[in-house]
Each structure stands twice: as C-alpha cells, then as structure tokens.
Image 1 (cartoon, rainbow over the protein chains, first blue to last red):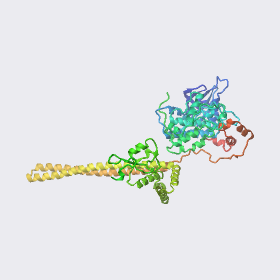
Image 2: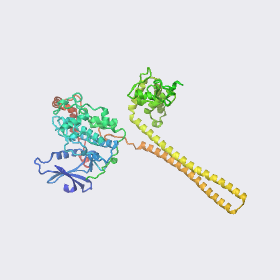
Image 3: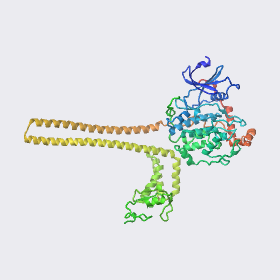
Image 4: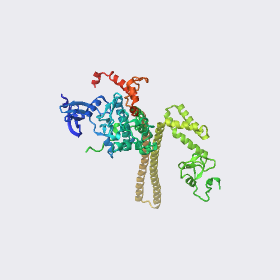
Length: 310
Length: 319
C-alpha cells in the first residue's frame, strides 16, 4: 500500500509559514494522529531547515516524555510528518484561569519535562526552543516535549552555534550576550523560567525587546559581574549596563509565596546566571524537591483543559 | 501583700491595678507585667530589664505562665522543644523494643542536659543536626499526629452524640414510668371511691399503650447502643485498613523512571589532552564564559563512537 493511504487527513487545525497541520487517523489501527504537511514548493532553497531538523532528531529520540514521530512520507508536493496526537499544550493550561494548579501538579509536570530533557541531553541534542507552548499534554496527562525545529546536536568544539535561538522570554543570559559556544545549560535556563511561570501563572521575565530582556532578567536575578561569573566580560555583546544587586533569599520567597525551600533551591539552581554553575538535568532530577511532600501528582489526575478550543 | 503581686520592673502592684498580668519569656523566665512588655519590647528586641540578665528578648516570645513553679514551666518548654523534633512513636520501631528504649533514653538524656545546663551547646547542635537529617520524616510524623488528633475528635463527637441521644430516650422512659405510677394511684383512688367498670377499662387501656411505648423505647435504646458500637468498630477498621494500605501501596520514587545508567561504561582519564581542541577551548574565553567543558565533548565522542554496538536491528524492528 502506498504510504499516503496509511493515513487519513480529517481536519485542518492550523497553518504556519512552512507547514499545515491536520488531524487524522492511522487507517490500519484507528489511532489518532497529527500530520504536519511541510510545503516544499515556492522556496528556492528547497526544504525548510526546521523540517529537516525535526525529522532528524525526532527519529533518534524515543522517550515517554518526547513527542513520537510515527512516520514520514513524501508526496510529489509535500513532505509529511506523522506525529503523535496531543490535544493541548501547557501554555493553554497556564493561561486558563479556571484551572487550579496544586504544588503536586507543578512537580509532576517538571518531573516529566526534566525526564524528557534529560533524554535529549544525554544524546547530545539541544532543543533550543523550550517554552510552555512547546510542551504538549497527551490525553492521559503525560507531558511531551515537542517542536524540534530549532534543535541541533552538539558537535566539535570549533563549530559555531548561532546565539539567535530560543524565544526571547526564555533566553539564557549567555545567549543574550551573544555566546556562540553554549551548552545544554541554555535549555536548563529555559526550563527554570518555565518552572517559575508554572508557579506564578504569568511569564516570569517578559522582555519587550532584546535590550529590555537583559534589563528584565537582571532586575529579577541580579547583574552578572566578573566576580560571580568569571569571563562574562569576554562575551561578544557584554555591556556593563545598569547594575542590579543579586536578589536575597527573602526576596525570592516573597516573589514565590507558595514555593517550599526545596522548590526555591531547585529553581535557583536552574536560573543560575553563570552557565558553568547551573545544574544539569541529572543533578536536577536528583533534587530533594522531587522526593519531599507533596508527591508529584499521577499524570492521569493532572488538571485538564476545561474550555474547548475556539 | 506578697512579692508575687508586684511587677519588679515598674513596681505596679495588684492593689493599684487589679488587672495586672504577668508574662514570661522562655529565654530567661523573668516575670514582667504585660504593660511593661508592651512598653519595652514594642520597638523590637531588647535586653531583659532585670539587672544582670543580658538576654535579648522578643515580644512575640512572651507568654502567660502555665505552672506556678518556673522550674516546671521551663522543663515542659524544653521537653516540648525536643519532642517536636524527636517525634517517632513506638510503632515506628516495628517491634524493636530495645531500639525504642534507646530512643527514649536519648530523649531523656537531651532534656536532662538542657535543663541542668550540661553540654548545652553540644546538645543543641545534636538536636539541630537530627532535625536537618530527618526533616522529611519529622514532618510526616507531624501530619500523622494531626491526622490522629482529627480522628480522636471525630470519635469523641460520635460518642457525645450517642450519649445525648441515650439521655433523651432515658428521660422519656422515666417520664412514662412516672405516668404509670400516677395512673395506678388514680386507679386505686377511683376503686376506693366507686368501682365503675368504664373508668377501669379506660385506665387499663391507657396503661397498655404506655407499656407498649416504653418497651418500644427500650428497644430503640438498645438499637442505638448497638449501632454506636458498630459505627465505632467500622471507624477503627477503616483506620486500620488505611494504615495497612499506606504501607503496602507506596511505590518507591524513581527520578529517572528507571532509565539511567548508574555505572558509566567508560572512565575518562583526567590526563587526556587533545592538542587541537584543548588549546582552542583554553584560548578562546567564550568557551569558558559559556560553561563549555571539554571533558563533556570527549565523553560525548566516546559515547557516539560506541552507541548502537549492542543493538541488534532485527530485534529492534520486531517492536
């Protein structure tokens, strides 16, 4: 049977510059799937880069907390990625005021998120676009990391990475300073900001533009200096802008009223300014935060989205 | 007037101000009247106003005395402090009686040390250390204690309700009995006066109905008692089941969902040196400032070189 006939496309759910997304079914099993149809015509450079990245990395990664690439097939006009069907994302839940998060819910999401991220990192893959609306939720409540359009694997030290990655609000300070040799720590930073956002229910560091992002970030977490981040002044875009002092523990407690001490410990280790002091996913999963009370909520019992997509 | 009735700080006595109240602070247990506490400590922590007492006191730590003897007051405070940290129960030792006795002995030793001022600093340190080490268990024990207290209150409420209901029934029974006595007296008078058949049967009927009622009440009371015992038993069973359940269904938490290599398959020699890349990473300060670690690159390379060697494609395909 030719590949396209293995799947039916039932309903168009979204369209971007490079792709159209359909809901459909696997004809053989009846399993619900999503098909991302990449437009190939009209671009003189050929196939869009992010589609290649997505296929390349999702093929390699198989994990409970990473979106599953079921299949890939080409038609004369299009390249089609058949993905696992995941009805909504974490951002919708954060914005939905009718949904109440308990500390156990936040813990459960962070646990699944970090397990997925740990799997990416141990395979040498950086996601580089972590944000709540790239964290999808399955019908059974599992969190899955999606959208590997900006992902890349770490290569030789002399490869230069572009610093223009990650959505602005979740961008790590070394990226803001234009580093071209960054590490997994940029993903950990984004995860830390998402953790903060889960507790606050509002974006933690919403910068208006790239310059403002530096100010917002350092206002909240202190300005890096040579003493707390050796070598920072050698980064290309480093600029001794306004100096804000490091927030005290008490200020953090006031900002995150419901957080326990272990939760604050974990967050501060994720949003450490100096990337060499930032904890990695292995260290984070072993944090006390995950074993202290309240225990992480079972995925099936996590809050579900109340409103239907309009 | 006894010395006890005068505030040693402001010399106010009970004669002039009958509403005089004394407070003490568990730092030094010196008695100070409440208006002095307000006056002296409102602006923040200060030294105790007693001569030669250099303890710094805080207003929120002042409390009313429970025991007449300050020695006892102090002992209960210290004991409470130790027991709030050492809060295991006999059940926690699972039949290890010797262990439990040792534990109790340890508690007594610490309380005694604190009371008599023997190795106070050492004991405090030990207490603090124990608290840090067993923080999770302590809080779990505290929640259990709260739970037990809640259950106790529930049981007590149930018992109270049962008693009230029983009292009401008893009272009704008593009233009916009184009525019976009254009736028989009336009957007697009636008989003595003039023995009319109708009056007699009427009274007889009445007595019959009362008797019926009171036996019904008695039955009701017995039923109530039975029901209460059953409910109590059910509650106890429920609690016991819950406890047993708690112990059996807790699955140990695995941070990586069991998916982690604890033993590395290779060890990197710290002396390994790559002339090109080590030099590059050392010379370009961007690497260092971005948290780049050359060892991680080496580890990744070795990993990539051997990944898939133990993987049989035919077996993987079968999935």
